Amino acid sequence: MTTQHRFRALLLEGIHPGAREALEAEGVEVTLLPSSPPKAELKAMVAEFDLLGIRSKTQITKEVLEGSNRLLGVGCFCIGTNQVDLVDANQRGIPVFNAPLSNTRSVAELMIAEIVVLARQLGDRSREVHEGKWNKNAKGCHEVRGKNLGIVGYGHIGRQVGVLAESMGMHVRFFDIASRLPMGNNRPAPNLDSLLAESDFVTLHVPETKETREMIGAREIGLMKKGAHLLNASRGTVVVISELAKALRSGHIGGAAIDVYPEEPDANGEGFQSELRNLPNVILSPHIGGSTMEAQEAIGKEVSIALAKFLSRGVTTASVNFPEVERLLTPGKHRILNVHRNVPGVLRDINRIVSESQANIAAQVLATDANIGYLVMDLDQDVSHEVRERISTLETSLKTRIVT
Ligand SMILES: NC(=O)c1ccc[n+]([C@@H]2O[C@H](COP(=O)([O-])OP(=O)(O)OC[C@H]3O[C@@H](n4cnc5c(N)ncnc54)[C@H](O)[C@@H]3O)[C@@H](O)[C@H]2O)c1
Image (tube, rainbow, N blue to C red):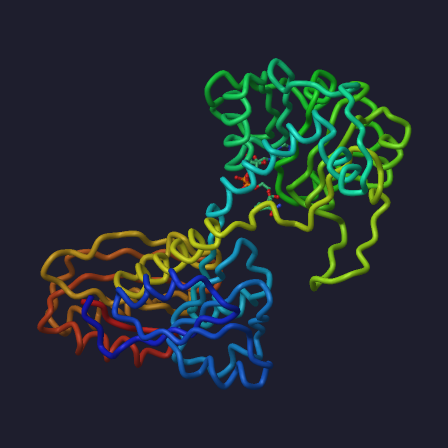
């Protein structure tokens, strides 16, 4: 990658060192900090960098982005992006990237472990032995081979759970609102009710939407087989916790594994409250479904690769707030990247500049959203710098740079 100046990246919140390596390999100078500075300091620091990497705690508000003229892109080294003002970043021409898939496998593996732990009441047995109580007992304990697993939400995680569960001899059915290609011998269920009624284990892998909010309440739990198990590592709002607690106390539900809650503490420490605490055969974990070293490393790589591709080629396909462009740089040409306000006449003005410079356009892609247009244009090297200079002075231009 040849660049106009050495790009500088600020990575906050102890992002995995793999991210630093990936960016340095692209010639980016990286500053890695273990935490996030206070807001005023953060604002001043952001102004000095081309790239910013954060995890979930750093709030990138409108105020922080003010004065961030140099900033080209933001990487959220996590799944969620609601800590960033995505609209404001978009309107400033700053794409935001995340890592939606890097911890998929970690969640799927935890589900498999929990299915076995629930089937064997292992959580309770382990606690008893820790307390000095010997309770060797097979009552209510089962193999998972031959049991029915119902997966609600057959997306990235749900599918992997299905494949892994099948390899242990489980019969897998899934329900999804979208049409999904079954993996292996997994079979689709015609509707949620029938899936609930036939499953020995029900595992939830849906996103948080209006439709999935409280989708598992008293009625749905009532449809489940007596003694069946419920697992939720999707979003806390999907299950009505009070109804689940009631069904666990009555014995209608034989066990549950819950990783996510309607309200979760902001920080580690004492004081977590839930009606599910201390109920029999209930595994409670602190939203750690995706928390593995492998996932952290994969997130570090996924986001830094997306940032590097954006720096070197202007690729925005992995961005959550930007029009998508993925196109290889035409060999022997320079690429101009221009983000502009999405108003009529911009392309006309840009093409006039190109034509006055007698430049030959080898490739041109324009992608737009409601606020901005993102133009990627490959053209002759001898005029590219002059064309970039003139385009950047257009009143509609937000950011214009060149990659070679
Ligand atoms: N516990 C953790 O640490 C952890 C880690 C990663 C992801 N998650 C959560 O896991 C969930 C699934 O993640 P993913 O990457 O598999 O998402 P995904 O988008 O790949 O899959 C979600 C699937 O749910 C389906 N769906 C949406 N609404 C539905 C509905 N009403 N009924 C049935 N199906 C519906 C979608 O069509 C899609 O196939 C998300 O909520 C995510 O936030 C949790």
